[in-house]
Image (tube, rainbow, N blue to C red; front, top):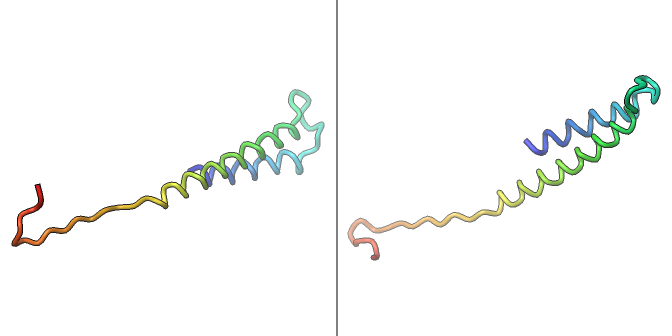
Length: 73
């Protein structure tokens, strides 16, 4: 979810920052909101990649026993 959310925030932020005129809405400066969304998207993307890297480097140990010998105590 982190990678998808990061990409979504970057896209929405780029639309707000570059495609909308700065004076389109007088209450809030949409360009600044766009830059904030881009920054948050980059942060979410980096954190998502770090979490996926940690998840990919796990190790699993499989123990198999011969049916003729009892398992160790």
